[in-house]
Amino acid sequence: DMEGISGISEWDDVLPGRRHYEAGRKLLTLDVNAAIEGALEAGATQIIVNESHGPMNNLILEELHPAADVIRGFFKPLCMMQGIDE
Ligand SMILES: [Zn+2]
Image (cartoon, rainbow, N blue to C red; front, side, top):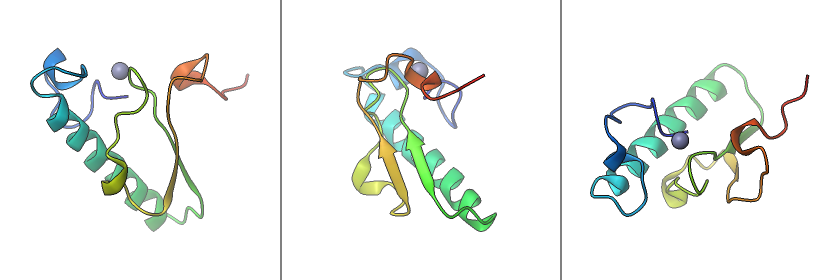
């Protein structure tokens, strides 16, 4: 998700087409990369990033850590909760 990540402070940061959206995408990508690096340092052997903000295609893929696989796009009926079980 984008709300709550580093540097996000207003709707213009997270809504496609708004004036700070591209900067918001950059912040999202940097935060996700930091999480990936932390997971790898802790011993993770597989990284899957599940995009879930808005249209679920906000990450800048060419800047994403190469260790990650990404699930993106609006085809998950439960959005960010898709795949969670009891
Ligand atoms: Zn969101």
